[in-house]
Length: 113
Image (cartoon, rainbow, N blue to C red; front, side):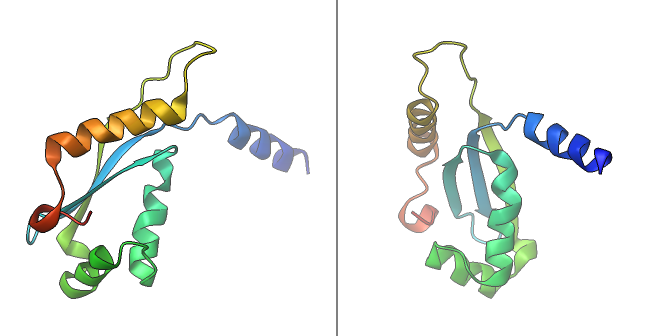
C-alpha cells in the first residue's frame, strides 16, 4: 500500500509540457497542427485515430485510407513558461500555435484545418 502512495505522489509531481505538435501525412504532405497543454497527450491522438474516433474527420479519413505508417507525429515547439503571476499559459499557447499556423499554413490542400 505504501508503494502505491509513492507512485501516486511521483505521478502528481511530474511536470507536463505544453506545446505545438504536427501530424504529417508522408504520402501527400498534408499537416495537422495544434496546441496542447500536455504533449504527453500525443499518444491519445494516435489512439483516437487508431480507433477511428478522431474529431478531425478529414484526417481520420486519410488515416483510414493510407494507414498508420503514412503518418508522423512531431513536436514542433515547447512552450517556455515564465515564473510570473501574470503569465497566462493558455494565452501564450494560443499565440505560439498561431505562429506555427502562420509559418506552415496547413490549410486547404496543405492540411487538415
